[in-house]
Image (tube, rainbow, N blue to C red; front, top):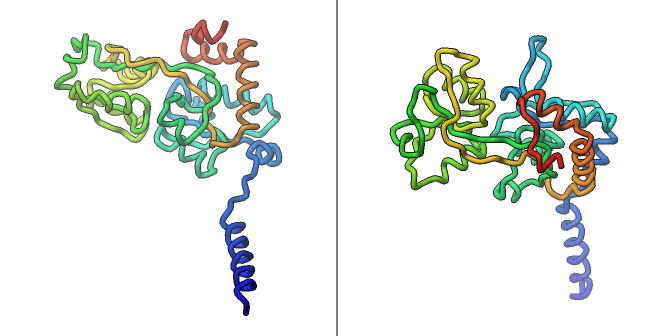
Amino acid sequence: MTNKKLLGRAAALFGLVMMAATPAWADLLDDINQAKKIRISTDLAIPPSGMMDSTMKPTGSDVEVAQLLAKDWGLELEFVQTTGATRIPNVLTGKADIIISTLSVTAERAKVIDFTKRYATLQSDVGCLKSLNVKDWSDLKDKTIGVSRGTTQDTTLSNMKDKDLKIARYDDDATEVTAAVSGQVDCVGTSATIINQIGVKNPARIFESKIPLATFDLAIGLKKGEQRLMDKLNAWIVENVKNGKLNAVYKKFHGVDLPADMRS
């Protein structure tokens, strides 16, 4: 066999191998429309954003945002139960189409997923027992702060190396709250809303916000490269901020309006 023929066969074989190795990129928006269903990764154990009501049906601000989206798009809604740590893996592995689950926009997360425009915000604080005299970071020197693993609160506090903080990590917000309610920790790093929920569960252990951490923008998360889905989600957010529906959902569960700069 001549060298020319050998080279030709080698080139053909290489082409076949490359075709087999190249993934067929399906358009996720087309897949969603074809299935007539959208799978949304939502934590149903972080009131008031996600929880179960007395009839064991999902409710909460993120739940109602997801329900509004599915209704507007004429799709069946499937909730994919998640925790803070599994929200992003759910979309990366194709278990869920998008994330609506108090997902804060961070530069680190933006390396692996795409974010829409913000649909809400989240005020995060360090909260402690009301009886504790905590006014600044030095007052936390001998105290353990509970956080939910993989959340922005975990990352923010972990990066404060100079403050020598003691951090206890829990698998999800519900477990973190249980630790606070039961006395395993006297301080937590979480949303201001969840801090206020601790005393509701155990009136003998009233927590209050002591030190502000940050206000985070919350956005819908999706796999990178799904531009058509991103554009449609962004248009939906703009429309529902403008018509007041997203603000109404937020105020219903959090007791305050969305920031004025979002609503203007």
